[in-house]
Image 1 (tube, rainbow, N blue to C red):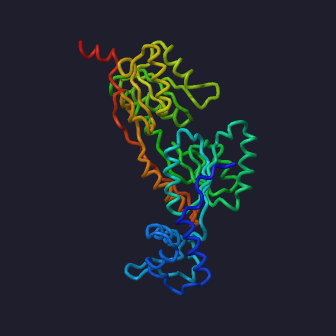
Image 2 (cartoon, rainbow, N blue to C red):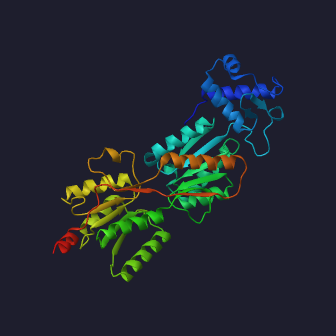
Image 3 (spheres, one colour):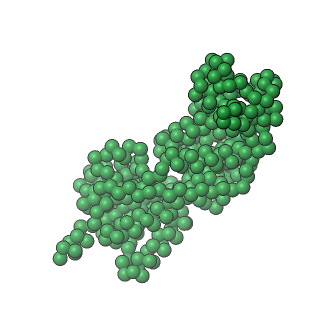
Length: 365
């Protein structure tokens, strides 16, 4: 069963009441002024403004400064308008890592009077057949209720199945894939290259990447190694693929510690993995950044509370959520043209990157 994030809030109830009155023909062309309207509905002016905003978004009303709200076509929405209060289904991969972004998305959709149902993909990780059957049941059950699906960091196979099931879908993910699904994407390939250059410029020639790795990632890494070899700055890169079932973060850290020579630089997938990595290194007497420099590809909301500031890449959450909201509105208005928006994370330098010990020794001599 889905977690229903929203019950009907006061401005949504007010919008429904106004919609009913408009459809019943209570007002011919213009609504009463907002003061009289809020008094008749027994709600505050800000609540009324949000309710009117919903009907304006549905193209039932047009606002004219100093004149008021005009009813359009006896309350019938224009072609391409949103006729009813939409319901958005959110399918996410990991509730723990997306809590803050999920909260911001739901909050923005609530402001538009939308209802939200959230489904966790943790229930889809058993078998491919089971996952496909689950999605088919999900789409069939909510076919007449959910107007648009937002897929947060789900894998490419789930995206393909959702497209095959002809669901109105929008994706938010680290990178684009061959699904060609409209959505908002971080360019993690570019971020990985930037992180490799950051470490290389500090003198690191032996680097380990702990992340979920696909063919595009491998191509980026191969190109980087070829470039550094041509520059006579040959760099060895060890890949530890977290996408493989037999691999785990703890095993990746253990491999890092056992490698000889041990990498002097590490690129880790996210903040939560960084916490595990730093704890394990500390138990083995390996210091950050004196012995190993670490770059985190995705920040966490709690990273600012750490004593040692992490060198990390951050996404502007509010800007990202605004782009997602804009894409949802396009789909609800019937725009089927694939629309892809790219958002680049920004580097926030911290205290976890330094030159490797041997590099400092060479330079001092």
